[in-house]
Amino acid sequence: TILAYGQTGSGKTHSLLNQGIKTEEAGLLPRLIASLFLQVAQDVDNVYSIEAAAVQVYNEQVDDLLHLEHQAGSGRDMQIRNNGVIPGLTWVTCKRPETMLEAFARARTNLVYAETKLNKASSRSHAIFQIRLSRRERSKAPAGAARQVECVTSRLCVVDLAGSERVKKSGAEGAQFKEATNINRSLLAFGNVVSALA
Image 1 (cartoon, one colour):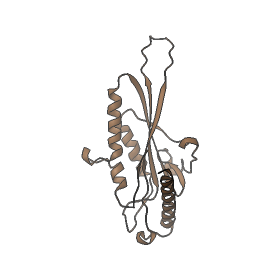
Image 2: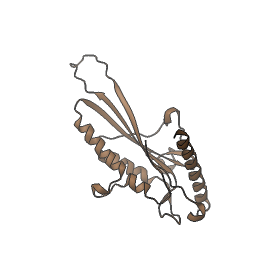
Image 3: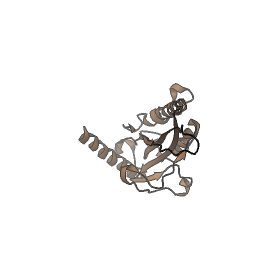
């Protein structure tokens, strides 16, 4: 898991997610995707399956950002099970880096943003972009021969945490006040966990 943590307006989203026109302008996630697909293409001994998923935690509710009916309200308030598994989460199979970049760009359009005094496009939710990679050895057995093949699966999460903010400085009121309260509460809990583990 890779996390971006900091005050609102400090450049977390840009550093992680910016697609950029030039390579040097690209954020961490597009660079990871390009590198992943390059490494997979060079590995002739194994077969890979690569999938993408994206969720947001908005006001303590988990939403599927890639659900096809997200705009109509589907894929919201999902439950998290053991090991962070979300039953029913939409996973998009990606055979090319462009497919994954398009999926994550679509997910970003479903994120909740709002303008505050501190930030014109303030993230009002925590966004989690997930890549699931499965690898199995390419079969060298003759056609029709039975052979047991081990499959290894891993998951990479890139997390764009909403920025902490002081409500007096941001001017948050109404729904934005509730969002800011939930953001700050979850960031405090996260900070406590990190401190406890240190």
